[in-house]
Image 1: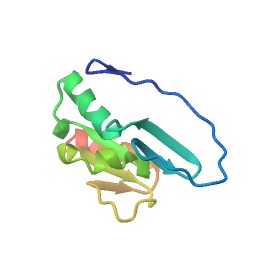
Image 2 (image 1 turned 90 degrees about the vertical axis):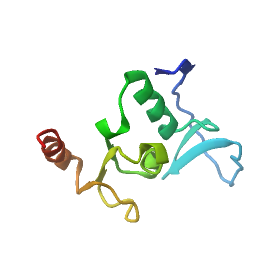
Image 3 (image 1 turned 135 degrees about the horizontal axis):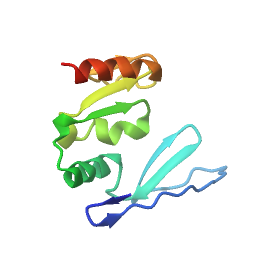
Image 4 (image 1 turned 120 degrees about the horizontal axis):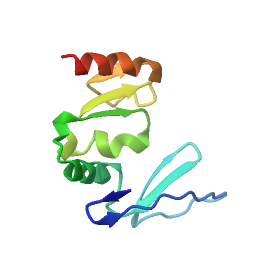
Length: 117
């Protein structure tokens, strides 16, 4: 992915760990047994802002579909508060959204309603 003159390289690291370890100084999200690790200050929220800038879009013109804690950097980012948010499932009960659906199969109906408004 190329955004705002910065290269973002995706790769997988498989780690088995038996002790806790310190990840201070880097940004990471952990869910179940997976870690998303990026350089400090780089996360889904910052990448989303770069993408909007590169595409010339306003946050209010976009929809974000989320279901897990690794999506929170977009959901909670103050510059992305006007993004239309669709939450799928009940994994994040304390996180509100503009729309909440039970399964990924329900998202199409919500998107259709948004487009046809």
